[in-house]
Image 1: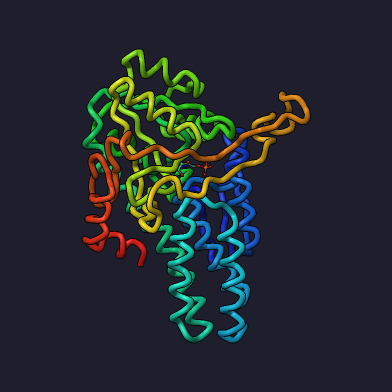
Image 2: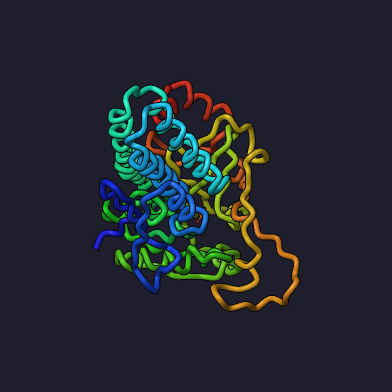
Length: 352
Ligand code: MRU
């Protein structure tokens, strides 16, 4: 079975419900943009590229729901869906990138049937292109992975977090496809446990060797000299190369620098946000206290305790060895290199 985070079925979107993994593999069927936004907010679907694809389908569903309206009323319904989806999660820029692509379609198409048809096609294209993009960045990243490598990763950046193949885990998959032996060490990724529940399940499912560790063991592991490189994904990369990713990534980056281990960030160009000057301006989502005081129905922290639960942190560019993208590897990313990349037109092409 190939892992499919999303399945489009013409009039509905089936989302692999990541809240149930690894215990149950079940799909959640959505027919409205409100249902899609709820699935994003509650982490039924998560991971920056997957969130972007899902939001695009949310707009396609809104278009189908209002297909019998005149263009002005259809546009109003789409604008309302856009607002609901944009408010679902703040950090992953792929969400806003995908919504902007969808807006560009409905502001140009003039008849309702044409608008609906083109919006559906655009969402399907965003979904399909993401797999191709991950395969391209995976191939570039695989050149950085030595044979018999031990790779430390954080959060889940695989097929579950994307349309398929993955970003950081896509690099691992491509290295294995190129004949290299790779062993993944997966941080459990407190508090939502994307590493323990999702990365461990996904890699086991595909027969990729994986060892799970508590987040606090990463320092000991890096100090032991067993890790050849760290590869993580990203939710937003600022113009100066600062990287927002799952909470705990910054600690891993500092530890990797302390122990002289390369720290690579694999991300599609749709994760770059050159409108944001530095990581300090990236909006960081704060999640509910209940994620830290317990899990599911179980509670272990005392009632009334104050909780700090940011979902993401920012790793300064100076700690990043490379950005691995679908147009190549950017060593030691900085403002100059990212602006030079923008000047090539690659970002414009990606953002339509
Ligand atoms: O809160 P999540 O699970 O959506 O956070 C996901 C991450 O931080 C991933 O590392 C990131 O989106 C890159 S996924 C290819």
